[in-house]
Length: 206
Image (cartoon, rainbow, N blue to C red; front, side, top):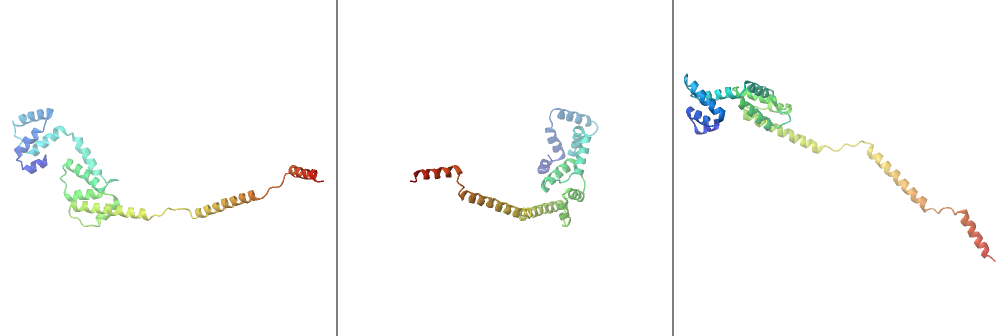
């Protein structure tokens, strides 16, 4: 709703009225009662006052504490810089942090991956946009470098493996040649066959 208020430049009274139209069921009933009761003492005149009332009524105190813990421990991890930045911004907006930009930049830098953070620290940046730009550039540079290293790597093989394979091939070839040679040699005649041949020859001789 903040964008609507800013775009149309609503007065505080219009902001409150528009926000009230978005309430439903129990929230609307509670708001009507709150306005009636508070109106006897003072009138809620600003959107910030109304928002504070709504947050106090519907957002538990532990919710803010949990958000703050998540925000303080937030780090990039295995995500891209842009994904990390999106969650960083989301939590920061929910907390409505009033810290200076310098503090926010220091926290964001602290949560970056070490290799990216080291590259960014060498640069000169004056605002969050600069910091984010350098972080994305550093990430892209690291990715290109890793991809180039992967392409240049050759598959590793033990130094003796090729020689062993060659010796094995020679051994198989030698066995094959030996088998062929054995098969080509005429085998010895059986004694029975030789005796039969001689007997037949003797019978036919005059």
